[in-house]
Image (cartoon, rainbow, N blue to C red; front, top):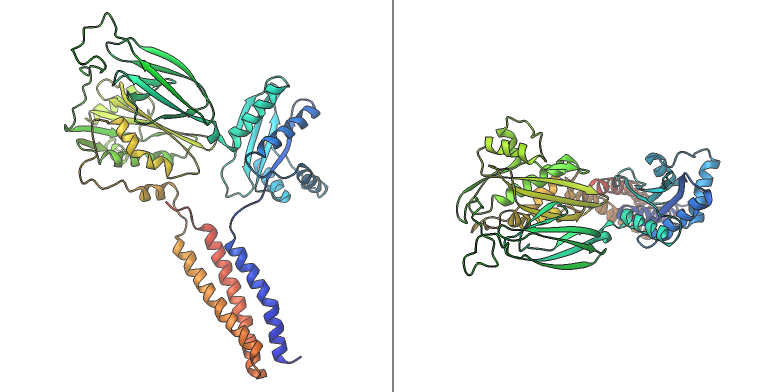
Length: 480
């Protein structure tokens, strides 16, 4: 066979391979379905099968679910090959999910007290950490099916279980407590985002009769509650014109424009990494430093002032008050970052250093996979904690990029990917030119050289584009 024919054949053989590899490097979206494995544990096998069917049916509302027969066939094939294992183990579930061609798997177990536990596991080891939700099921019937639906929603779409509570409270300045958490003085600057279900509202003010109210929030719904306190007949007669405003004589905080020293303690962490809680506390301190009249000790400065020791009482107000007095600050901010399924909640309180009493509170909620959302709420949280201190004129905005990068640092910079991909693209163009020259050249020698150049260039292109694909996997494309 002439050399030109060999070169032409090489070109025809290499072109499809280069195109396929290029597409494989570019395509990064994971559209694999969700697999629901059989429910194990106690109880009748038929009852567990029915639970599995209800779980699969409910999961289909939030994800693309693999057909039951496909999942079952994959598990049977694995058993035949001797690859079966305990699906309750994360690594086993990942292995079986990969064999079934799934991106995520749901495993379930029914306990003796009729508690159903469901776990959501990403097949890729680099995916999110496994999430588990548990719910005690009522007797078989409609209520049991509804409970399974709710449990699946808690697992796959927890954001749909949230509701908004709008509070219209008088008098101005009344202290608002919801579910034993101080939310701030009336009026609140924004609606409260809370889990669906019953909630208790307590409103109190000096010289007024306190009020308690129960409200039920629906998932995805919104409730508006108006609470107007009545004057305490035994309280001193208010000054005329001040009937609907709380007397602030008992507030020792300085008026606007005065200097107030504040310490921000590192936030406690529950279900979230310590690093996340620390970055959140540093971000709040940076936002408070923009406020006029505030002298702020950041968590790092607090730790340095305490000789490098970490505060051992992150949730004990009295203990923190003692530390705050030792730091000679007027007030301090303590908080807790928590995670439930994919939901992050951040609860903050401002305390008076002298008494340790909570003066103002703030609360926010965001999905865990939205890393910038908790940071973007820092200005609102700071305003709720220190409403009498406005942002100073000319203050630079909070550098969200720096803090979000600290929350999820990119293992590699994106320019590395584009550099490698650019080199691969240049090689691909050069290889294409050599291949075209091999096809059209009439000189066998030139055609042979062009064919050899194409073969070498095609091999180099595959290697470089493969390296670009590896770099692309390591790059944090979501960015700060």
